[in-house]
Amino acid sequence: MPRIRVKLFAEYYELAGKQHVLDLDVAEETTVLELARLLEEKFPGLRGRLVNGDKIAEETKVLVNGRLIDWLEGEKTRLRDGDTVAFFPPAAGG
Image (cartoon, rainbow, N blue to C red; front, top):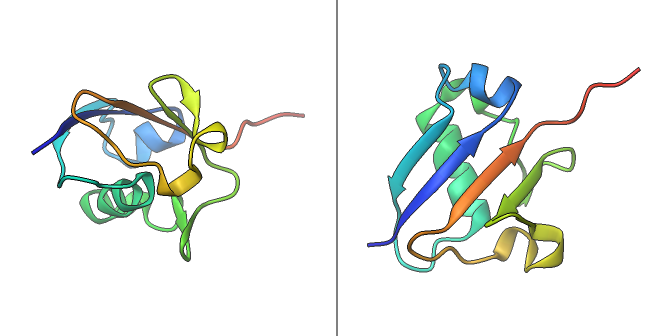
């Protein structure tokens, strides 16, 4: 069973009960989208923030091992043992 590290930033950290780094065991071939759904189940405050229908929420930025999933296989990117996945909320600006 692969073990991955999840990092939550800014409001996602707050909504997950101030959990910044999590080490999770996931099923083989788990995708980024499946991981996001798992996080929304585990932390009700994240519900509707990471996933929108069958996609990662548009404003959410996700990196796997430091690379934006946009440059990988998007939400279908499969996770492997030892991967680090970072979730960033929309940037505030003004």
